[in-house]
Length: 133
Image 1 (cartoon, rainbow, N blue to C red):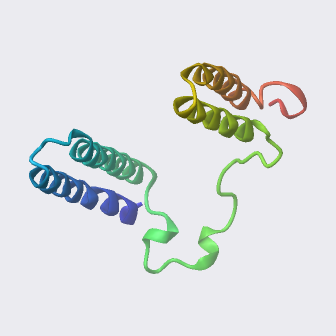
Image 2 (spheres, one colour; image 1 turned 180 degrees about the vertical axis):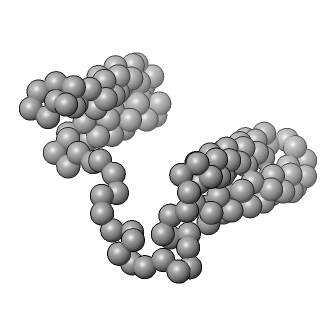
């Protein structure tokens, strides 16, 4: 995870610099732009720290080594649910929340309720029914 760690770590000072330059250009009167860039720098720093911490704990992947062979990266990459409908329900609930912000705030409450149901269903998908472990 060395490349990803370097990418996000190097983006942190870039976003801080761009946020500061943007703040000077607008005379610090438009707070959303430079604040968003500062928050992006913080998020980039957190992701870089997490990837560096995880990379030290897990060790080098085949993608991190120059002498790695293609077959070293083969095999199972994770656990995915190709038959799950819960991501679709969660996406529809997020769309409902955003539509509620644009149309009427009361619609957001429906989206939040649907999102809670979708998250609970997705988390407990393998605890009940045919695919229970």
